[in-house]
Image (cartoon, rainbow, N blue to C red; front, side):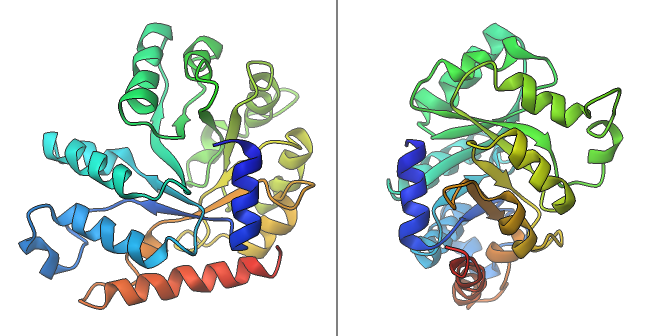
Length: 264
């Protein structure tokens, strides 16, 4: 999917919404555990209930790896079920030297055909460039994350902060780059947008982690009014825990989408 295609979907649906499929068997409704593949049944129901409200889905790979071989099958079925109109992100946070990075890229871009993958930039350019060799795919680099520990290293400064250096340096490596920027740092979003005026930002932290949707949009959208994928995971997929979980998930997703529509 190109930048223009993704931006057009955002405008058409009046939605920046990305839904994280962090599907934990211990948290899905009890009645689904009678199904042959409970996690896929859960994902399928969430997708059916929300696909018209969002522009992207983001399976967190750890939740599938933890299930062993069955988890990879569930992930494959989930990816196949997501409509082709939606941007798909493998939230894998991979980051290793060249040959290994190349295999990770092949796994997620060729074998599984995700549109994008999250990548940790700590090891530098040769751990990222193998992912950028796929011209029709996207690399989403961790820049300023939403977790409490983000302050341990990302704000380190001897001049520009570490996250600013990641942004500035990585833009020399290729064009198909997006960046993870946490909604829990709204005061930094305008500065980040100034550094990366034409890049999409994947923004976690709205909802369960307390980030402000309005602050994210006002400070983070690009000049064309798009440029954001605002992720919500737990706040949507676990909005309900009983047999009506589908209705609760849709209500939660629709609430966010309607708030987003005011800005689009």
